[in-house]
Image: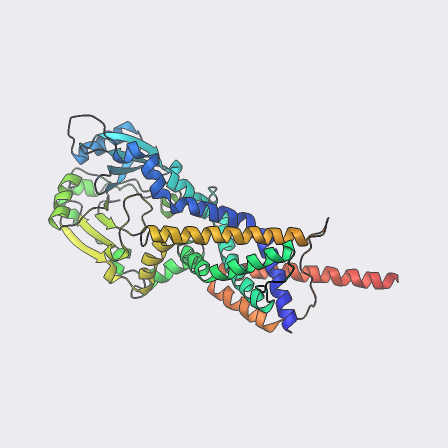
Length: 453
């Protein structure tokens, strides 16, 4: 039974590694790139982030928004990002499908602009999460690779101790040495890697949406009702005739996820950003923060401080997260949600995501993540080398199927992982079906061989 359990782990470990290694290399390398996106962008976009227009005329922020929208026909401003010195103010403009970033100096004069799809951070993030291709299938494929990596790590841990893989032989050949290094480094990084991957699954396409739904449906466990259903502005302050006009609608979550966003709602009765800033300053709200425009006549101005914004210079500590709502007509403060109002799951999001991205506790976090990623790459390389040295010419040299009997501990282990990671569980059904087909084919082959004797 012990040999059966080991052979089951070895066989599935081998095939899983064989199929997902290309994805693992992409995920790890793009993850390293994203880990240092703030450092890279501070250098790469120095003129945009810190430069000046050299124009003497001082514009109000609202005049700057109008000029930016005039410069990019069809685009409207959905967000104003106020950053700490020495960063320039950043505008996010959208046409409902694509986004542009516009940077303003101290005089609110335009310094430059970027296509959101092709900034370093977004290229790294999109490559890491969807191979820069996008689409549900690719997102699920990347998530599936992450789930199977957890299986690889845990099954590798079992085989390391069961197979005594850490023992150094007196006269090791190249394959044995690669096996020992593969097992040693894999064992060391198993716990941090499982934690690392688990925090990445928080905002994945399949499991992330399940967790998000749980956080939404259970406010005491996740996000407060106020954050899910923001308050409304007092529409009695706008003319009746204007109230009858249908407000532009958002392109939805799908568009926002892939670079598009809502087309903002404006009217003559809406308070200016400059006046809204006075209300913000009066409340002693410190930079950095985002000001998000209302999306319809009843919408509110949202002022947000986030720990996982993905924008250079915008992230704050998880405990400083806050979402504040202001009436779009009077600028009056309505209500707010702070970190203390989050449920346990929402707090886990607030800490887990920046930990995964490498900016929770400064450069030591980046260094820790980098070491883990490099160690994981080494594990992959040693695994490939070990297979190449063991592989016979012209053969796959997969671990043999020594028995068709079912190993109960192996099944229980897979069921537990399948419950914890539903997408992994769904993929196991496909693996079982493929294995049954292979077993059936091998059985028929044996029967035919016996009949011909």
